[in-house]
Picture 1: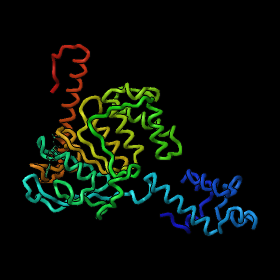
Picture 2 (picture 1 turned 90 degrees about the vertical axis):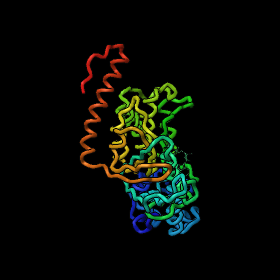
Picture 3 (picture 1 turned 60 degrees about the horizontal axis):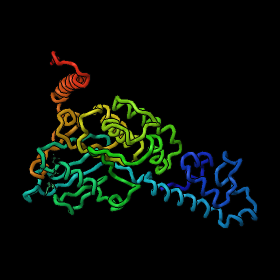
Picture 4 (picture 1 turned 120 degrees about the vertical axis):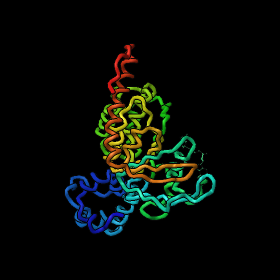
Length: 339
Ligand SMILES: Nc1ncnc2c1ncn2[C@@H]1O[C@H](COP(=O)(O)OP(=O)(O)OP(=O)(O)O)[C@@H](O)[C@H]1O
């Protein structure tokens, strides 16, 4: 909610910069802001004569109240109101596949934390991500409950398309639209009412190229992106453009993308990231890992110092595998392996 007192001190150019859509309020209500952008709304209204005020059809207070209401509603609509701020996510225990209570009471995850979810095939990793996405309220097969900022979340999260709590990155990123990368990102930026889409589109493309190493540009048709390139584009888009405070990743596939860079990009944007994975590198990159067995959360482990050192070894191993992959692709014979 915008506070009226401090709002009154904003100059028109500051209001327009912060809330670009406010321009249409001024226009529709015929408020003469032209050449007065250095003034506050109150200063402008005070200088209007009776006739001009009559044309607007509202008192000074009504104009300010309506403008604040308009901005608040627009912010909610595009999903950038501060009710979107998520400081923590809590998972309250439910039952495993046999109906037994899970072995924990609650797990609290904070902003900028990264959590991996590990467990055998079919153990329930994707189910946990789905519980979070649906903000389960004891109404899913696991009977878990999800709290946001320690409260039962507003049901708006479940149904709103513009105000999404969760951004999901899945393995399959098949684009079917006949658009260039620039057109695609521009559409997304427009839907978020971004003021300067050109700058942000450039940033997303640069980040995606940094992640995939296989460059593309703004003119590349999205249908011709490779698997790695489209995953890189979606990750960069999610990190930079999406307002969703929680990112759920169902395994970042190995090929064609630097997973460490991808995770760092998401973390820098202060998101909560949960990754269901079978990949040791991703599992150990997380601050904590949730171990799932037979549909239930078996335990939560904190990545310890020894594991962090081992992560470095795994990264070296991974680099060597990448080198071998490149050599094989280039028709070379694999004679030496450096481990
Ligand atoms: N606690 C539970 N109670 C009832 N059903 C569950 C529970 N947990 C998981 N399931 C169900 O078990 C099935 C397998 O779970 P899920 O797909 O989440 O496994 P997974 O660990 O992601 O598997 P994979 O590694 O193969 O992707 C799903 O149908 C899911 O709904």
